[in-house]
Length: 244
Image (cartoon, rainbow, N blue to C red; front, side, top):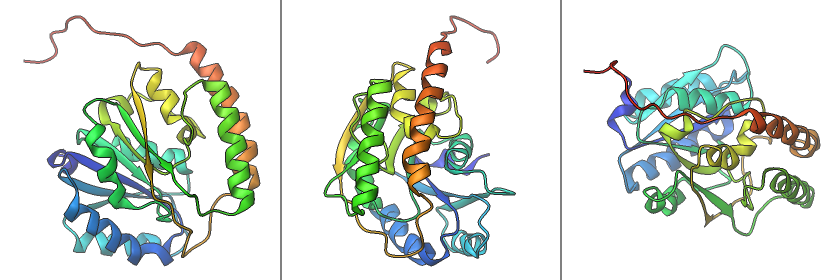
């Protein structure tokens, strides 16, 4: 039986070449587990790291009973890592945070109170600590995405989210999907709420994003979303005889 069934919330943490952040991840996520408003665990997804992140993850998980991991054979990208984490999550809720820890795991407790009313609760990065170029490109991409999706969300790029797992598992995944989680939840008639959370500068490791995947890719992915949206459907099963 999948061990995440024993928890209310599984926090998915995609990891790609973050060996310098591993000790900080262990400490900060461990602190959150102790203070979490609901029983919670952590699921690391090693996205084919070429440094020592994978070995460090295994050691961390061996020493912490509420930490688990998946390991890809090769690098697949952020959307695939989130997708795999959701596929292997069987708690009621699936959370997501980036391994760079520019958001604080303890702020999950700011999102948890809204889970009964909303299928996706995500952060808004208050007082962002990024460079001018990163902030400007993010603002442009967010504005265009909001225009194309009409999701009403101001900061879909905030790497602190909690989703109803049942809804999360129905999301149609594709490369770049992580930018459209609110809109994809709304396609299922799910409700979305944004809550202000803290934001910090990166203190270790290197960003995996550049102008191309922060600005150009989101523009292209918006058209992929619009194509998919026109073909998306919901269905409701009235009856079956598959269960006792």
